[in-house]
Length: 260
Image: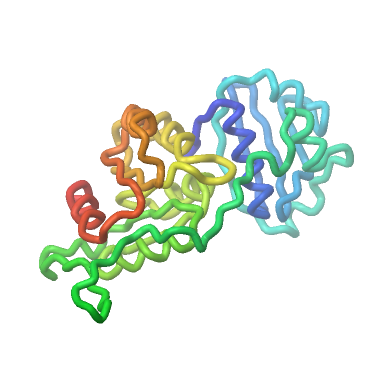
């Protein structure tokens, strides 16, 4: 499966690959004859090809693109060791496009406010989980992708969903979310908007271009609660917009509504 993004967002995807120490080949093209390949080895860009140019000479052609379709193919480090352009590295690649390597990486504190509010039922502060639906109504085979850069958020949501029978896969940034959509084929995605590298808005745009009306249900789950953010997300075809912190009951009711 290929994903389509504006070239600026495609560069964010590459930056996310570097930040996450990915190893593999990014295949991309724009038009039938304009194809390219970028080799990333343990987070290091070591080879670039576009049309008939290679290394730094390939970058002017990439800069002229507007929309890029791409796919990431994981590879073993040993198989990439011979693919090396001596004039290319992370710094030279991103500086050519005017991007400082760490400029787009947000520092997120995983110890920040919890995503889920549990309901206290007595003076002993006993935590009560949201009531699970009857066993006969559980969709045990349904798989939900949680895309959020906060480990605390992902684990909290995962605990609630698995507790009522859903299967869960996780992604800690937008690039990984797109990969999990392809590899895991989930039935629904819970998507944070603010993530390093490629954010939730770009993920929504990529899915909309690639899958169209056949896409899975998407629920935005974010700490951003402004009207502008809500309207922006709804125009990008998400089923619901939930703001953090959220009660377990509300989360489950929303998930159950759109996964059936």
